[in-house]
Length: 236
Length: 236
DNA sequence: CCAAAAGTGTTTAGCATACACCCATGT
DNA sequence: ACATGGGTGTATGCTAAACACTTTTGG
Image (cartoon, rainbow over all chains, first blue to last red; front, side, top):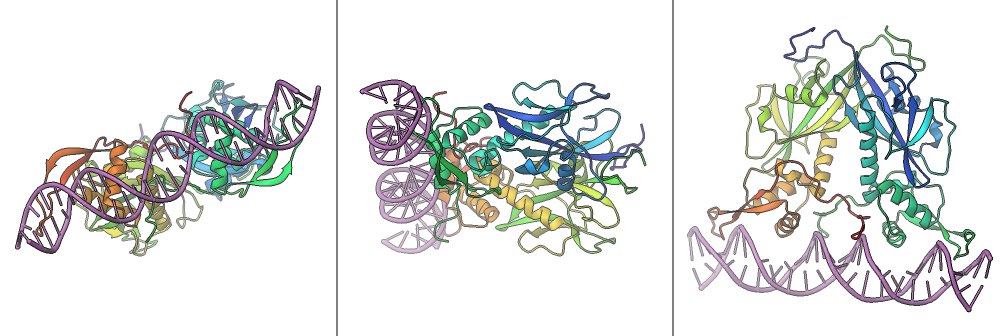
């Protein structure tokens, strides 16, 4: 081995940095993640997250957008945010590679062209994944679930306009449990996250009242419930 | 260099990685952060966060603990968690250094020995800080504030046992606004975060009822309010 | 006996969930 | 008409903030 690792002496091994993105979307009531299949060792044929080496002149946010553009049309991404650093010295073999992981979201109505080696996979029911990428996917899923409850992040999963029952299915799929349409509409409306589009759409093939269309009032991330408790005093 | 990456070719510049910690505590009703004064250029005499280069054989969590041990007795730290990556290519001059930032907490009752160049500074009223360290400190403060409202992270600011009025002052200082003792006790008790120690302590010099001592039921981070809304259905 | 500080009881209000009921359409 | 799905009204319950009141001490 190279160095007597008391104080942080960097060894000969290069300390490279990569960015990785867990891009999620919902299709057919399932949460999916974008993966590509490796054609080289190590982890030949395993499925991996898109990403790559951090360039010298870019920050990690710029880098992940650039790297993703090779797999998916970046303009289709409705939201990207930093997740966490994964830095186990042996997270990838043979080299020392620190990863900054990101969560990316794609609305359910767009269907970006994908390279031949790239596919969507259900998050519950992943194929064999490369390195520590499964842990990153699960971190991304948990972040999305948490933010659905205290922010307007649903905008990133939904099309520009949608019915409440469509939105209910998106939330149910992402959260992994049944959400009631009534409450969803009321919670989001009260918070000013949702607004009526004023139009309705035709009823389904079996009849039924034609549903009204709604949209998110903002398509930027906003925290709608910053204080669960210990709110600042009303008179301050 | 090593490999011709397509877009964004890595330049000759080394892509180094450092860890930085914003260690916070509360003293005299103020939130403070641990900083050391630089003795070299760049940013001579500016105040900087403790940290340093990531070693070849350690992950970032191990590294930050090791680096901190040079400034402060690590056993005094009650909590450490990852914050975010700071990666602007020019965040430090002359080299390319990506930083993983951490939040650290020290209970208010311990007073670790500090090196001569190191001091506690109030977070509102920072001295001239080096590089992007001020932004990191503010990120740490915001993370602490958020977690106080939905987790038991108060344990990391408080001594093993304390009175409710002492705890009230800790929360008020961290949050930046007046917290009512009555509600604080009730919220934390209902959640099972707080429990009575069974003992009381002497009253103050001006009389008054002698306060009871309390403690946190757990000294590990626990999320106490995971779903602000959209809770899973009661019958599922 | 009074002031001071701690702790409890009670009121009020807001918010979320659940559920009953009404509405509008296709067949 | 009636089945089907959409939407609203309303009851219930929980939580927390605010404040009045009681408790226990020192002077």
